[in-house]
Image 1: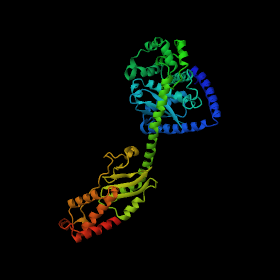
Image 2: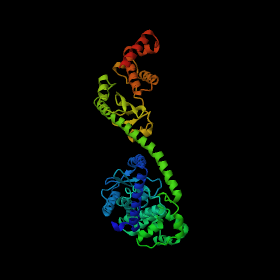
Image 3: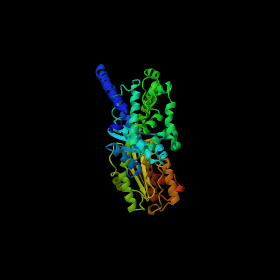
Image 4: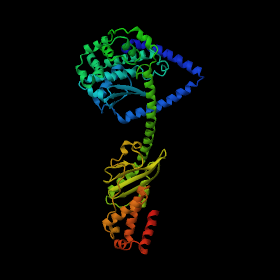
Length: 490
């Protein structure tokens, strides 16, 4: 694959590597090893930021596989074979919100290629052009651009040198992209799309476009390219069509001025580029750390939800075997609770069931975030909803964001049955609802259980007529107090 490496990259790569290693040695020795502490701190920061980014990609983008977007997977496989990239990196399609590009990244030994959906959609009339973007990013992986920068990082800010090395890498990756395309024209047009946009790229005259190279000469164009990490697009297209294409010379005075401008990274050239890079790092740290914290809490909350799966299965089986079943008996309740998975984030679990309705509520404590996480079914276990009225949605896994507004609906009111025959249905329902409304809201499932118990047991000893006529009589109050003690004990 040496013919796919831009000649200047090999030279500049050796220079930056040697200078970088020497600089690292001088820094470590000169600081008596203290610099390594800063390296460690930087590495920890990188782990937080990069892990959050990779988690976002895996949790948001669509992975390209043989089953998901098989056409793109086949193109990725073909490009990997052509360029000798083994193993095949994980590849994803991500909505870029208008961004027209692709990129490669790496985290703990795993390589990733991300194609923005805008690129794929725009080039669908010439699918071979998509290969260019895939091949370009595979070029970064093949040439170890994602792994060899640590040793060079201390010298890449050097004026002229850092920018020149960055531009050379882009030319090399363009060659890799070209190698993956069916023809040169498709590769060139894939690049032109970066300039002409999602529609007009198909009608751009490539000869006239590359002719613009000659019009973009002089002091200022030369200066800005010398301080930039990317070659002008016209030059990239010209060298994609003809790797040996001659480029116009640069104004020598531009080199003199550029010599005083540090390279600010691929975000841009010069001092302004350096400011942009520093600002981006600050923003990334400000965004990535909270995002990572949210991610860890969400993972722990997912563990809480997983703990509810055992009781959910047991309740589904209970409803299936007895569709008209009433409240759970104490023995049933204890047995179903015992089937919950053990996790340190669940303080207690309550279960409830009546006929086709059932729910499981966990009192959770996740990193000092306390509240209830629930699952419930209204249709006998065919479908279960999951949510929480206490935890913010960002702390809940995607499968646990109840579309009813993260508020568990009240279970059905008690049904009229043999042990509630003294009361009519509407009176029992109103009694139950009034009880739930006045009961403590800190334990919603407990309130449901208590109120169901009160309605059932009171109906056995106090008639509706007596309750309505003499609600404050000594006999009625004694019955209420006795029932309350029984239900609280249960």
